[in-house]
Length: 429
Length: 77
Image 1 (tube, helix red, strand yellow):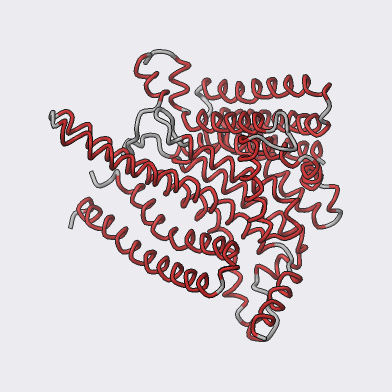
Image 2: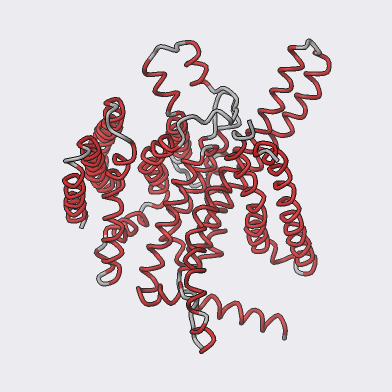
């Protein structure tokens, strides 16, 4: 399935490149380069998942090795292509996206007929087996797969931003001290990716620390982590019911990944990567594709179209069809936009608030109004930082809960509705 | 009216108007949730989840205005 999908995307990429070759050779090269990098990424990803799910002591070495080789190849390739300079971002991003699109379409086609043989289903079954471990893996791999292409595309779209201010983080400080160094220049340009990686690694490290020696009577740290995981599990189980086991890896990964990223921004010298629309849009797109995929898989193609048309059952419903269909499609498309804008706006807004107050403090300090500057301003800033902690948690919760709700709307749930009406009847009687 | 001046007047005003709407929405949601909590304290966990989701939807409207402001802020000049 994977190799067939990759072959198809190679064909499409070759055709596109052939079309572009006479006029714009570098664009054609960009498409091919993106395709190559994403294909390498997929091949290694498959190997990683296979090694990870075996979970024997012997597979640990090859796993680390494959991970390192994959990171070196994929991100080294990305950096090399960007350093080359002649390749424009748009064709490169198209090349990166091609295998993903082809694989997504293929898996939808497969979901029509023989569902269980599709790669996504197989991966889902495998992840169920190692729930917590898969949460970590998905948290690290899924967003990072999408982030570079998207952020490069956004970079190409708006070359000079300039209007938004933010507190300097350690990368910016390093850049100020060593303006010439190419490595730090690269880090400074791709801060969002660096901080997303940092948060992912921190999250991985924390969960490893908590689950290193799981005990029957847990210590305080393990207890805390288990409590958070279990309460998240219970909340989403209340919505999804028995299907939760299949979807919790993604939902839990979204929650903890976003939470880690948001909380990272509170520490001085760090930055929340979610204060950039690139990362939130990537996360929202992952959610969107996942929800649509499960919608088609569970409802079937006819049921999916019926769902999109608003389930017409009577003449009035059929008469409203030309209105309802575009409305529902627009509603589906609005979901990722609203998800990403909500997260981005909240986190960015909080950051900007704190920047404004810190800037005011600095201005008062410059005017040597020390007594006026430090005590009240520090108090206000601390207050807003508490608010920021709250926002971080609530926004991570809202993002993952809304993903759950969108998923819930796509899944068949007659028995749940029945239960509700039963409870209602019980309450009224 | 000059374009930057119109932006400088309109963007904050737009956020304020959006905030009125979200505020009313969140207020209604909170009122309903509180009343339900008072009547049936045992449905608290289920209610809280639904309430937070509702808050998210209502709050998003202001956030849209906020994001629009960020995108157009640079053009006030």
